[in-house]
Image (cartoon, rainbow, N blue to C red; front, side, top):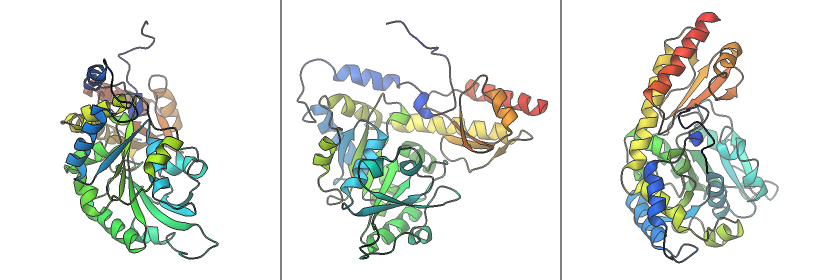
Length: 348
């Protein structure tokens, strides 16, 4: 097959735009050949359990799935009764970007709370975590947070611990959407378990696609009884891969060594470089603290229109755009965008 795209092009719309990391592609090739037991009975899925235990503790169990939406929906569904509800930020991916999948597929009610920085606090959770025992109200069962958040901010371990204590005190579970959990760990300079297992998190959606996988994420259950029936839900939700070795091999390649951390640190560094360059330009304002690999910028629509002649990126709110860096974003890519923004600002 002939290549159908420009392999030298870089955009800033999403880290999903990036291709697969060469080390991940090599792992896929290594996992090929011969026969392996299907539906997760293979050597690579067994090795993934060891890798998950290394990162999250001996009780952790990883359940590979095809994508992040599936990981979130399955985790929340397994942790909630049929009449359950999930408290989340109004900007949470499960609310804004998954086309109602938690409601449509899992049958859950999302109880959303507006947050200025994408982060929940116990006080914000308390706005919706009430009505227990009231048959007229969906029963709050899970608090779901995103790390790093949808606006690139981070929860410190003590902030997550406070949410876990509150949730458990109310008989609820705490779930972490970790689509960019590697970027969070790199920014915090902490191991994964330091802001998950060690502070009371029950379930994690373990991200991979945004950090160099072709496809694949996993639900990681940290509290053994937090997700009863997950194996049945995964199959019923069409997320049980017959050739699971190819999902698991990618996750092993990413997390067995330091590839996950190297890639995330690089993406974060490119975002910091981008933010520093943009902050020095008149007429441009960085709107959120830049901790992970996303930069949120306020600029005029005329400036954004000029930049879109060359790059793809997303509007976040009116007058605000989101710029994402990936494992393969280069300093030259960043500097070219900053220079273009400076020229556009000077002409407007």
